[in-house]
Length: 243
Image 1 (cartoon, rainbow, N blue to C red):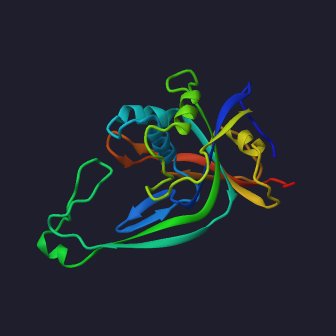
Image 2: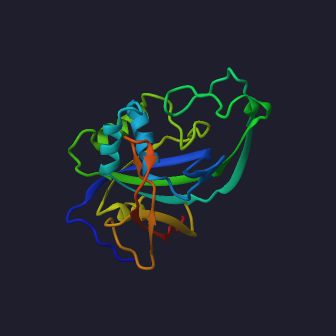
Image 3: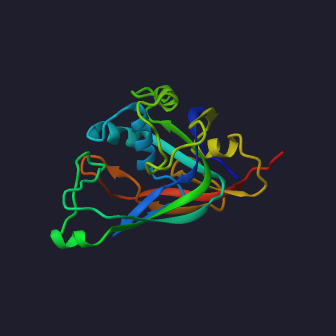
């Protein structure tokens, strides 16, 4: 493959996302919570913000961090997908926790309490993902070192996509000097493998022959609380020869 990078090597932070269950959430349709193959930019932003101890209402901090992130990912261990069927019988006085930080009851009036609350949630089972990232500009707060410290000593418990998805390995996975995000994914120490590993990286962070260009909607507007807009990414495969 050919690589086009920046003039000087840049420091990249590596993260290992590994757990029995992982949820790289996609667009939720009705009561179906689907997943993506790679973590959304908004998910990485939220994970880091949670480690730093930021509150969701601090939307300006979240938006700024998301804008500065240059993130790519490599699937080191393929997983299988499973669907969790969830059901709960809620009464008129029952309240549920929401990501907005306010309790919520069931809408629709008294007839809605006659039946249970049903939903389906997809998960990756036994997945291991390597993430490489850096910040632009690098000198603005928080800096990469702040993120590394927060990942090892998080202000709150960390989870990978959804609250049941607790990591089973140290998330901070070290440092790497690389030309760009693609270069970091290609040169980071792999899990022993002689198969093609799927990778994704943002436009402008390296070029690889045969890669597919995609437009994805994975940026969150932290002021409004919704996802919007499209950003270009590339997806391809690399082979990491095991020992």
